Each structure stands twice: as structure tokens, then as C-alpha cells.
Length: 183
Picture 1 (cartoon, rainbow, N blue to C red):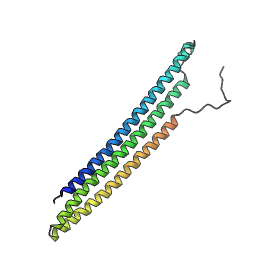
Picture 2: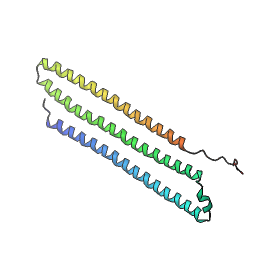
Picture 3: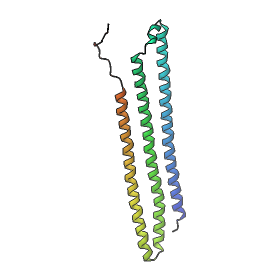
Picture 4: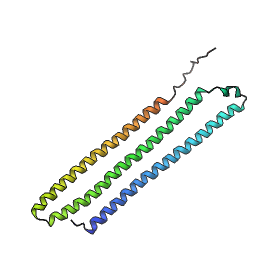
């Protein structure tokens, strides 16, 4: 079972390409997370500035009560932040699954090339065993593809659930014209 130099070079090239693709996915995710957190930080600073401005206009008597609208607004912002972070992490996880599957395929191609070279120089009895190995490897590759597809589907379902949870955490909007007053 020998590999030729061009087989090794091709597999090395594919491996480096997979590593590059995964690195790009990770850097993209890091960039998106960094941008998301910086926007959330600016938003929090702006929001706190508005709150301190309210306290500065002789409204300190209301400071002893916890304002529900403030809590709901903070809850909504945190919900959006988590939703976006889960989306970024989900996309990165899917990229990792795809890259791992492609890398296994590169390894399988090396094994298939080795089997093919061995079949050419082996007696017919060994060819039967090598064909059985090839069939087993093809079946394992198909199974891996199915497992990867199921894993990606699970990540997508988790993303949908996170969207639903963040949607449930959003406060109901005030209706115009309907204000309730308590005396």
C-alpha cells in the first residue's frame, strides 16, 4: 500500500485548504462577535447616559422605585444580544462540522488511492479483501455524511429555538390610546 508523491501532495493541499477555510470561518465569527459586543457596549453606554440624564433633572424621588420599562428594555436588549451570539456560534459550529467532514474525505481519498495501488499489485485473493475494505470505507463515509447532516440540522433547530425564546422575551408594545392609570 504505497502512495505516490502526487497523492501525498494533493492530500496535503486539500488539508491546508480545509484548514484555511475553517480559519476564515473562525476569524469571521470572531469579527462578528467583536462587532456585536462593541455595538452592545455602545448601546449600553448610550442607554445609561439617558438614565443618568433623567436622574439629573430632579427626578430622584422616582429612583427609589424600580422602573419596569427599564427592566423590560434591558431584557429585550439582552435577548437580542444572546440571539445574535447564538446565531454566530451556530454558523461557526456548522462550518466546523462541514470542515471536519471534508477533512475525513481527504483522508478517505488517500486510503482509496492506497487500496487502488494495492489492488494493481496484489493477487486476486487479496483483491477481494481490498474491495471489501473499499466498500466498508464508502459505507462509513456515507454514514459520516448522514451524521454531519443531522448535526447541522440539530444546530439549525437550536438556532430556531433560540430565536423563539428571544422573541418570547421581548416585551409587548404599548398600544396607542390605551393608558391605564391607577389612583
